Image 1 (cartoon, helix red, strand yellow):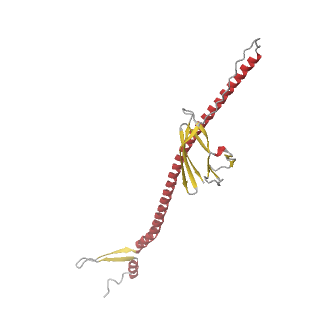
Image 2: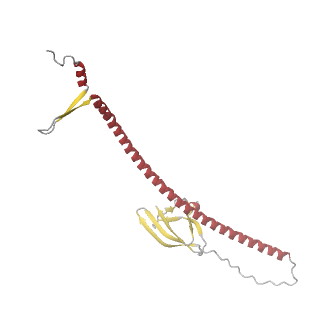
Image 3: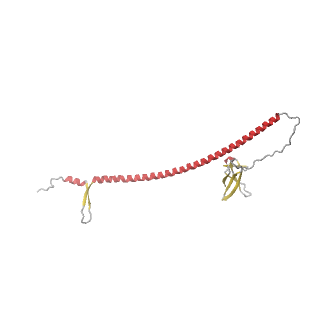
Length: 239
């Protein structure tokens, strides 16, 4: 008696079973046992996808973290540069105001010189006319009056001076006041020269640092520039 399985190809079933994976899920006692088959190709491609996906994800995440850190650094630099630009604009505005005051001050000095020069030329012209005119037979000479020369007074003064000694350095604070008053601005250069109170000490300190020639700065233009209308606080450090 022949069995019904005799005419079936066993090799094909064996190959089909080898290409599939049987998964059995067991529940509690009394429950059904479920099983299903998964193709080995699906498992292969899923494993290959995970092998590629996990390193790629790590690389992408690390790259994102690096780019974020670079972005934060660049943002901080941009903010710092913006602050520097704002500060530079403020300093440029203040410098332009000082230059405008200096130009106005220089222009006023030149106008005064031009006025004095014109007055001197007119006096010389009057003197020439008088010298060319015929002298009368009887001339009367008026008594000469003593000419009084008015020396120009100080244009600035120093008020509220405070001297502090810290170790080997001395800090000097004072207020420079314009004595002209009104809208007339006064400009110039400040040099602070200090000397020890000891009788044997001959060393001098200067602010700003400048070579002294016979107790006077060699180049006064290297001093601290000032331009004031009313007053200006000044600070210096000697030592």
